[in-house]
Image (tube, rainbow, N blue to C red; front, side, top):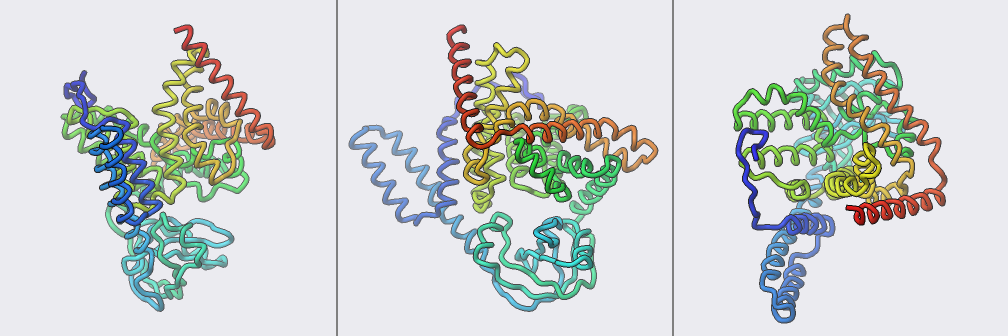
Length: 472
């Protein structure tokens, strides 16, 4: 069948099954997190190979075990290297040029920012109105001439900031000069500034929600808004991920279709890279960006892949390059939700066909909730029951805001006379999403009833699937 890149695609049988690739991703992630001694990996592998040959008489299993062993050993070594790199090379007084690596954000009564100091990342905390005001306007990529002291992190802080590659804290004495940074950062910062200016048309707190939906910037959301989105199971909407990438590519689709296949692929990858930089290389957007790039590459070479394989390959690539991602809850929520949406969701939707037009959103929502259930329960100790109706009601409207909100914000910022009219649909959409969160969080029952509710949902879905299977 023809691909989006104008190339005829044949059905091909791949050497490695999707299940094997998924297993490889799981092994790499586990080894990077656990970091076992590679010698023990070899010993256990030898035992497994002997069992496969002597008892099971399955030589192919030996091949799979050998490949998984190599991957586990590499991941374990890479994990050790990544954690050892979190030890600062040198502490004490330092003066020179630094680079802002993360946008400033309020944190426990202070303003927090991450600077790259002499090739290593240090977090800065500034207390007080004057100091906070000084750094609150800094942006990723900007250069700052500073003087200060590099100090070690508290022991309980190390693992918390490990996914950000932070090796210590930096106490600033003075800031003397600044520069705009590299061209990519200057461009992305100008676009973000324009979108931020456009958000003022909405008023607080919906301006902050708009920025969260469109660019994943939730720094200025009030605590009450953050809590109600968590309580309603809608907090994922303000974490930029695959949906945002898909909408950006969809918006650029008419222009991309004018190009030949390989130029289309090149511009697609460039657009993905820019959007990942625009949204600050967060773990969820890294996963989405790599998946989008792999999907585009698979299409252009005429070898389309199933979503589960693309997810697994993305995990393999990202964890191999940056093993510290296994410590990021945002990364695992993104991976889990994507697996749920692309595998379980469509499967459920086909079996819930009696729901009519609600079958697809119900199946996708249930799949996403199943995908994030384990990390959400382990870290946040809750899985809101109201997330099911809340997502069905909020996600389609949030999707429209994501698709329309970025170009609308750019127009509003650059053509002030049209700002009110252009941003009016965004205002309606943002208010709808927030209203759903308010109502859903208020309706969320207490813990015992939540458990009972999920049990009933499980029974209902199982019955519907069984009935649908029998009638098909």
